[in-house]
Length: 322
Image 1 (cartoon, rainbow, N blue to C red):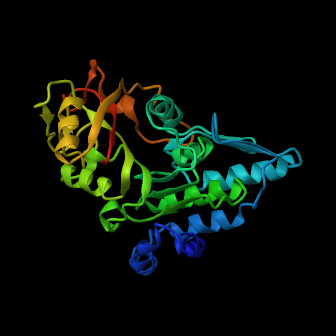
Image 2 (image 1 turned 45 degrees about the vertical axis):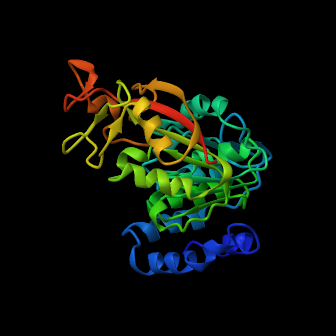
């Protein structure tokens, strides 16, 4: 099993301590009742990875680690074990000669987001829907003191723990397999990121309130999500699928989303970035071999999805909790 005890010890005496009233019971129930059929296989791959202290480590410009004394056989062993954790969707990672070419170029998203947000030095951060944790490591590279990611997908947890082990068992970052709706109102994080989550929520305003309830006063929300073109009243409610995704509920315009944030009590709300998702940013790779964005777009008109909706457009909004 994954050991969360060190995280409990870290937060026991700080602003996150009230979380301990519910979190251990939630994670115990998760370990008893909700393990994926491949979880033990994934965990075995993590256990067989060596615990390495990198001689070369870069979390500022990438997530990469290496050391000079590994043999070709040891490097091949690392790659073989990491391949057992496929598919890799968020990245990329460069770990001891293994370049994990993930489905998403998450570094491109990070480059779009970082110039628009408050400096992360010394901040305690919550990353909601963090995936395999790529952005969490980049947050540490930007100076964060602690990053907590939450994502219920168990493969992402295993991928995160594998990367953590190869980065020297860094205890400044932790991924917990829970959803935002399971968190009490902690009011304890300096910055909260929600990237690629809002359109999966049946009640988007409830999600915005949940995010607000995790922030300290004057804390910053960084929200990145799918949007559509249009004025402050424009919202798309797709049918059964959008770009082949089943669980897409509301795609507002960026202007409408700004109004939603203000309605939830956020201030200083600004639209920081718009970007069309390209087939270079999200694509099939040797580390994620199933269909990707190219297969989700109309081959006759790539500005539309296969269902006839506008092709994916993403916006970054930044807001403050008063």
